[in-house]
Picture 1 (cartoon, rainbow, N blue to C red):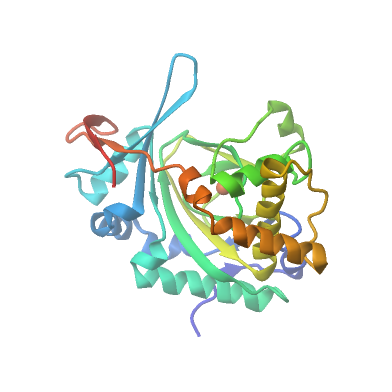
Picture 2: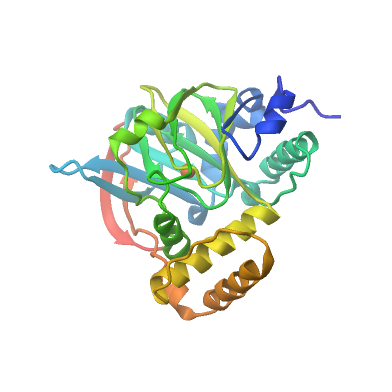
Length: 312
Ligand SMILES: [Fe+2]
């Protein structure tokens, strides 16, 4: 049998899973798939449609300008060096679909979790590798699938918030389901009083209750992290209720009161959201991806060059 991925797993981890934030210890940071050399080779062979390379700057009014770009002629090692020197992040999305070695690892990790957590059964597992600059941050947001964040190198501060009002207004969650808006949630610095704050170190993994809002601040070092997403039958039902409630609130003027995931109310909502998914409206509203309009600047670590914008 292959070596276990988790270390020091206790009954408490199994008991808390899905209800409370869980901090676990893993060995991905020692896995040969995540050395600089392995990641550099992966970057060089990565399909252009599957990665997102984002540059972040700030306007005079402090609002963020996010631009998406390409690695150009740089080697994988240079790409990592440019991220270490710049204001960038690279997301190697859906790596399990791109490379079977990572798919096998993803499946081994979830198989191990399922063996340790009674009743936990997942489908549609996915993995991304996120390489991000020192001091980069991810704004306050909430995700629809189950989420875990695994630290490989560097360290980052994770802020996790409660799943009730005012931290997670249902109308905002419904908007994420309807419009696919990933990072557009109202944040108040006062929320931090109730946040669970964790400095995530290599070998640590954090997972949290479904939809719990969170934000991330890298410490002053290059960060390499893995994000995994998963669905369970329960999470899928929650997602159906969220979308149906969004349709009720936004299109039918009815304020939804229930988040039940069983019984006749749920059945009606499951049918409502299924009908809604078949309308062309949904596709029209999904935001198109940003155009590609920069390339990493050769010879100038951390810098970018403007190129004529194109879309994939
Ligand atoms: Fe997230």
